[in-house]
Image 1 (cartoon, rainbow, N blue to C red):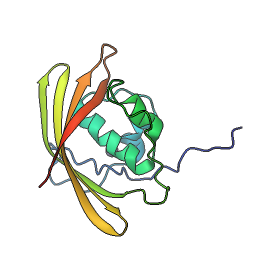
Image 2: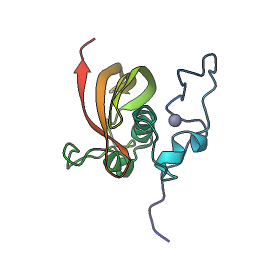
Image 3: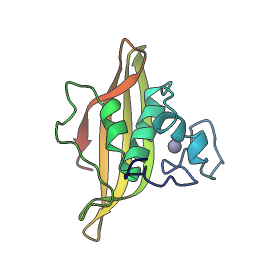
Image 4: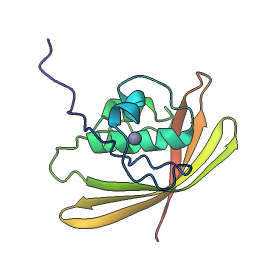
Length: 149
Ligand SMILES: [Zn+2]
């Protein structure tokens, strides 16, 4: 046995899971059937859109290992640490995917708004993220442009 245990997993998936083709379905999916398949189950996210959602969920759960594994090695910060329980850590409130564009079989963009709270203040991150699919078939986050509005 180890002294550390994995962070508790929520029943409902933090990403909200609302797919563009699931109009009217406002009930969040179960974590185990949504991002849990990728974060805990080791499955490769079939699209950058699903990878984006699972990475948001990993931020919510404070899963640094998953974020590293899904971050392009050339751009992943060496000091990445997303301990969700650390003092001052953002409290994530929700993810909205505004646009998903498959550019070619190995490149895609996802525009999203993530809402969070730090120091009691509600904030939003509006970013267009770039993803690339490696030779192992797995999508990874490369970088992104943050929008001011
Ligand atoms: Zn999810």
